[in-house]
Length: 390
Image (cartoon, rainbow, N blue to C red; front, side, top):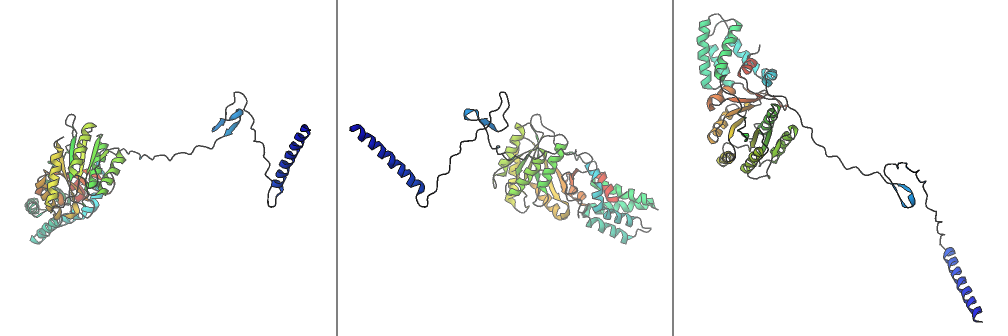
């Protein structure tokens, strides 16, 4: 009897389970569960066969394909340029100089070629020289020499007039001045070039172009961005350095310029470079405090190395105003050379004569265009010939 009861209980339970399943499956609004498909089985690779790239073996030896890896963006490294050497640059750029200065030369030649050189003509010659920024003193010397020698010549051919004027211009520019940039190493220590000047003269650009020129001559250079008051100046110098592979030492914006100059010099010693070029902030010559700071920069550099060159960058188009700036800078630091920028534009070529006469230091570099290789070592004879034409 007990066995029959047990069987009945089991049958009842099975019936209840089956009824519940049917209720869930066919209840109002219910949907049948989708059939479960067996997993796809991929064919096993033959023994010794290579799996495709991005595939790996899963359980049971099945091969599954993985998504391709996401490529990381490539870091763009600027291509380092190889600048041309500085030798012969002014000769190559002579045509640009002639375009801006030949009117001055032609005017003087035309006046000196007149049949009769009376006082009125000499006054006009003197006026032309002064308006060309030659300066009053050098102009008087030139006019006196020209008057004397033209009387000796008597009749003057165009060739004789040109030779006469060329001689006087060269005498005033003085081709015998030593215009060599002092950029030779001192044993293990690099030469240091300090670049100074008023804002707007092209000082930072000249620093970058000078570095490019020296690297073209085979030298290794470190740049010091000591103009910490203008973030744009440091960024500009960084761009110049990146283009030619020169290290650039920078400091925080508004930081101590002397500290940056010191660190740049230390880096140059550590890396055994040939030249360290330090770009300083543009100093307004009326601000005594800033000029004193420039003197501090020079003194701090000299704790590590010798300052071999102090280049004053002057905008040739500013004329006699540039002369006043030059005189104030010369009182603060020992200027050793001048870099005249924008000489190919509206500049008066006579500024070369007057600035040398006033400061007693030579023009060593001239900017003759906007291109990266348009900074050239100054050549007095090429300059005068460009003014006078062929």
